[in-house]
Length: 123
Image (cartoon, rainbow, N blue to C red; front, side):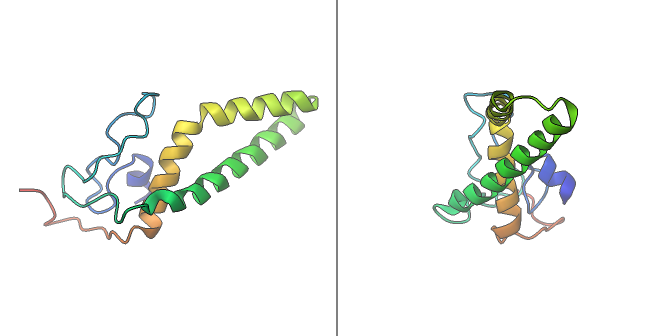
């Protein structure tokens, strides 16, 4: 399951892609498929489902802030503006990954979609 989540695959068949474009495509990194191309499960279980992913995204951001702050403190111990600039820069650069993985974690955790390895393929 962890491998499928890291690769942003469907939680039901773990083969189809959840997102329609790669994360490095900065104009379309947020576009999701409406349904899995392999098993045809809906990837948005209900309207507004992904609003809860904002809390997961917030947790990822705080975790990143803490890790970057500790690394800076124990490596070079810079001034406060270096902390602020580095953290803001890292959060901006990691925003597409934060967006995607917060949605994936939320979908796998609260989507109510169970893994079905056989018999779920589109005909």
